[in-house]
Every structure is written in structure tokens, then in C-alpha cells.
Amino acid sequence: MGIRVCLAGATGWAGSELARGIAATSDLALVSAVSRTHAGRDLGDVLGDRRLSCPVYASAPEALSRPCHVLVEFTAPDSANANILAALEHGAHVVVGTSGLTDAEYAEIDGVARARGLGVLACGNFALTAVLMQKFAEMAARLIPQWEILDYARDDKPDAPSGTAREVAARLARIRPPEPTVPVAQTVGERAARGAIVSGSQIHSVRLPGFVLSTEIIFGLPEQKLTIRHEAGSSARPYVDGALLAIRRASTLVGVHRGLDTVLDI
Ligand SMILES: NC(=O)c1ccc[n+]([C@@H]2O[C@H](COP(=O)([O-])OP(=O)(O)OC[C@H]3O[C@@H](n4cnc5c(N)ncnc54)[C@H](OP(=O)(O)O)[C@@H]3O)[C@@H](O)[C@H]2O)c1
Image (cartoon, protein in one colour):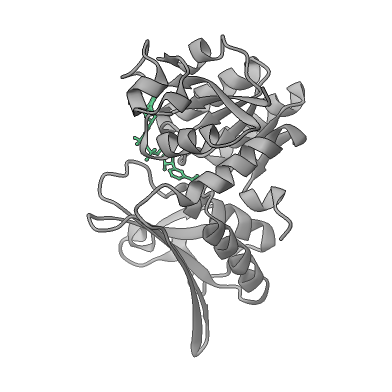
């Protein structure tokens, strides 16, 4: 049967597209799905595609009663952490697409995963163009000590900053800490106007109708600046290929690994 997958969030915008992507492969098989609204139904009936047939459960622990190799977490920030830990408890590797988990949560997950010899591949953005944006930003941070991150998303996105912005900040922190001319703590006026400090970087999150998801890193030097910007489209299709690759590679890892490039040759 190949790699058996439990898909948490299988009825959502991203999860349903990934379910169709999994069904189109010959080496991956959906064995269970998680959605509170559609619990007790068959995923194929819910999504109108018989190739996606598998039972839907209300929670990850229930879905994990059907043995799987990999749980994919594509629900919401407030349920993701518990789902990931439940998967590790059941001996499954995990692919995390959900945004909003903190560095502290990932540190705890890393401890559990390493103790059990399991892999967790967490990708704030599975799209190839977003992965390249992260790589280009890392190259720039090696040479330019000052940057800030802007994160634009639709008005109903509940979490901030986006997973992509958090991941960029975490990556740039590994290159060097940014060196603002005026330390943010010494801001005169409204300190919050300088944005949130995440992994040492200033992040400014805009939530407005009309946006899908864009991430921008501005690097500044005297008399010059460089803007690296990623723009997502409105379909979830660009995330599918990266997520499929992550599912195939998760079992080769131990502990938490952040970013799709950890399993790409770039
Ligand atoms: N890494 C990437 O490349 C990438 C790409 C796209 C999206 N994302 C992230 O993925 C997450 C999901 O995004 P989306 O747009 O697909 O959301 P969405 O359309 O709201 O779908 C959420 C899915 O999770 C289920 N769900 C939500 N809360 C749950 C809970 N407490 N228990 C069980 N199931 C729950 C929902 O079903 P029920 O409501 O029926 O429970 C639904 O199936 C977000 O964090 C988003 O930022 C990441």
C-alpha cells in the first residue's frame, strides 16, 4: 500500500487539495482524515471524489486508531500542537503545514520526536517559489545586517505572523541577529508601531481583504535597499507537490526540521 497517511484538516482549503494530490499518486494512500464537521462520513463522499475514500474522524487521536506512517497537520494553530504530539505518541512521523506554532512549541515537539526516533518536517510554505525566497533572503542576510519582514494576508486569517514569516525570521536568526540603528526597546512613542520581534526580526503583519498571502523581506543599506517578495496565488495547488515530497521524506528524519529545503538539493 506504500506510505499510509492520516490527513488532519482534509476538508479544508489546503487539505482537500492535498487529499486529491495524494489520491493521484501510486505510492501514498490516505487511510484516515480529521474534520469535526464531517466526522463519521467518508472523505470521498464529502469531497465528491471516490478516489479519496477513507473514514473521517472528529479528532487526531481517533483517526490515529487506524495505523499510519505519516500524519499531515493542516488544521488550525489552536489544534495543531495537540495533533502533532498525538501522532508522535502513536509512532507516526509528522508533516506540519499549519502555521502559527511557536518556537517554544517546536522545541517541545523536537524533544518528543527525538525521544521516539521520529521525524517532524514543518514547512511554513510548501511552494517552490517560497522556498527560493527563503534561500535568497539567507544569502542577503550574510551580507546585509539590517532587515525587516512584512507579512500580508487576507482579513480572516486568524494567526499572525504567518508561518512563512515566522520561518523566514527563524532562518535569518541562524545567519546573524539583525542590527537596528535604534534598538526597538529605545523607540520613542509607540513601541508596537515597530512590529513584533520574532526570532530577533521585526515582523509587521497586514490583514486586509484583497490579499492572499505575500511575504516581503526588505534589506537596507545606506543609499540602497533590496526587497525580496513572494506572492501566493489564490489556489492551494502550489502547495501540493511540496507537501507530497515532505510526506515521502519525513520518515528519513529524526526530530523537528523546518523548511522544505531541508529535504531539497538546493
Ligand atoms: N505550509 C503551507 O504551505 C500552507 C499552505 C496553505 C495553508 N497553510 C496553513 O494550513 C492551515 C490550514 O489552512 P486552510 O486554509 O486549509 O484552513 P481551512 O480551510 O479552515 O481548513 C481547516 C481544516 O482543518 C479542520 N479543523 C480545523 N480545526 C480543527 C480542530 N480543532 N480539530 C479538527 N479539525 C479541525 C477543518 O475541518 P472542521 O472545521 O470540520 O474541523 C478543515 O478541514 C492554516 O494554518 C494555514 O495557514 C499552510
